[in-house]
Length: 369
Image (cartoon, rainbow, N blue to C red):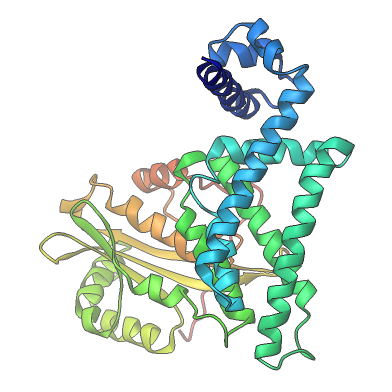
């Protein structure tokens, strides 16, 4: 009898914590009330008071819950990783973007409490201790990896550990803003790309592998162009140039793309249908923004065969461009289109692109070109 009663009480506590997580994500801490929590939980205010003396006690228990859940996930990942420091660091990245841990509501809870932890001693004892413990672990692993590569005089372990922490925090903010549609595998790839850049002896660069892998949605796949599919890419590129009133010239189109591929001066993607026909084409160029001091990408060419339009092909290509830019640490993607290309403008704006209204675009045509 006592055991059954304890089970009921435990279920009620768990229900209240889940409801608090939902309420924080919906209302934030400042507008949170016990009435809102009890309403979401489907329990009376008296039930809340029975289990928790105050709202603050319930909030601290909720913070303890998500903190312990993260710690358990991290401990499990480290156990599976073994003793190798690079594997353990990769395990930390995997645990940091576990879909269960980074559920949108729980990320909202972390951000809400983190803003409070700077001024509240009780919150700081939970958030602060956890952050210090995890940073110490991260720093130790960076030191071991640097020692293995004999790079102690060239690389500062604390700087790298801080960079990984900052990168993870920024990606968690993206989860907060984008919700459950956020691509957590892409977030992992960004982190692993950074680690491969600073620790090339310890990690393989995942970007190239990801670019060469077909991304399939339904009957359409997005693949990276190379020498094997150069002819198909050139055909679409030639049609694209004709759309902008250039004369047909398949040889020019092929030679231009072949040089871009050989020099790796651009990245080209093809949309391929179920019959292996190339039906869409996109080309991006890497550049830098001096003001932001960051890399950017210019999406210069985008073309979909007329018979394949209104099937989401352009959107798939544009999403691949975004994935490429994020994996390379770019701060933005720039593009241009004709003022009367209404369909393309609608696509861009639906994907979050904003029309530039503060700057004029100038071009200088050179006579000897």
